[in-house]
Image (spheres, rainbow, N blue to C red):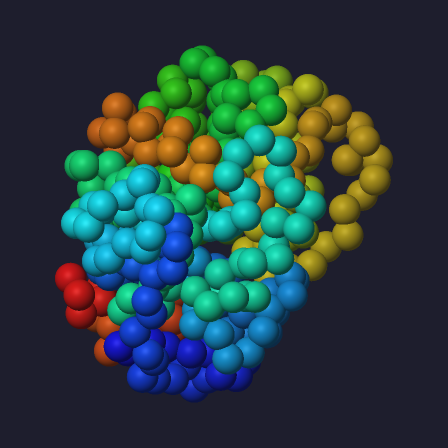
Length: 339
C-alpha cells in the first residue's frame, strides 16, 4: 500500500510517498480502507517545525480521516466489514475528563497518522459516519468540528439567544458558526475579505467584522452584542487576537482558547485579563464520546461541512502548500485511491 511520511521539517519537500506493508488487524482492531483525509493547521505547523507540542520526524501525517471497514480482528463487536467509519483525534480519550497524557499517542505527531491507504486501529478509536455525509465531509469532523463542538458545549453550554464570536474562515471557525446557529445562538464573525464576509453571511452569520479595516474589532463585537459583550469567544488566533477577544467578551462570559493561527506575538496585559471577568477554557479537541454527540447533532441539524477544495492522493504536496497559504474557506481534503 501507499503512504506519505514527513521525513523532515523542511516544508513540503519533506513529504515523501512510500510503500508500506499492508497491516493485519490484531485482536480488537479494525482495518480501515481510508477514502479521505483532511488537513488541519497543526499539520502545517509540524511541517514548519513550529508545532508547540512534541512531534517526531518520519511519521505518516494527518489526524483526520474517514473510510470503510475492510477487515476485523478477533473479538471486534463494534463494527463489521463494510461499515463507514472515521477515526477519533485522541485515541486514549474515550470520554469524561481529559487524560493527563492525552498527547502521548497523537496521530501525526507521536504515532503514525492517516495519510495512508489502509490503517489498523483499535475498534474503540472509531466512530460511525453520519449517513448523510460523504467520506470527504466526514473526514473533516474529528479535529475541527469536534473542537468547535467542545468549545460550545463543554463547561456551561451555549444556549439559545446567546452570542458567539468566531474568528476567521478556517475549519474550526466555520463549524463553530454552523453549530452555534443550530443551537439557537447569534453569531458575530471576523474576516479580512469582503468576499469571505458574504460567504459567512450565507452560512448564517448575523454580523461580520473586517478585522483589517477595523482594528478595534473586539469593541465592535461588543457593540453588536448589545454593548454588554459576547457570551462565548471561539479564540483561534492566540497572542495576536487575545487582546481584542478580551474587549469583546462579557463579564462572566467564556473565551475558549483553541489555537495560535495569528503570526503576531503580543504580550497579554494582566489587568485586561483580570478586568475582563471572563472565564478561560483550554480546548484540546475532545473525546470519542464528544465525537459521537457531535455526529448526532450534525445529523439532526442537517449541517454540511464547508469544504474549500479536494486534492487527489498524488497531489498531497499541493494540498499542504494550499493550506499553508491560508486563503482557503473551510476545510481542505485529500481523496485516496480507495475512494
